[in-house]
Length: 128
Image (cartoon, rainbow, N blue to C red; front, side):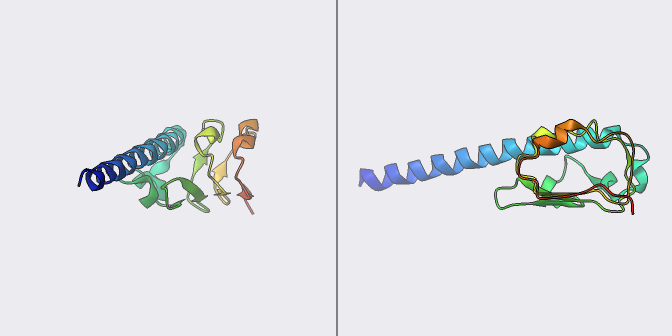
């Protein structure tokens, strides 16, 4: 009878460890997005004004996550975003495959740190 109890305890341990890792990874992405948001101008007109640590990052406007709650897409065309990308922490998003910020009011150079997005397959920063 001791073996089923040990298996049960092991399963619970694995689930708790997995949940902690997912939570930590998601928190890093969440904090990076909130930090970038804090550097933007006139966000009260933008749909991202509703981004809040009180809600799951995966439920935020324009944010799509995978099954492990990593941000894989930021889809924010015409989101009335005004500011720079130099405050965006690209290294916090190792799973990001799509970054769509077209038709916003982003100014300045595209930071070299954007090259840290190793999984990126789609990028749109146009204003057409």
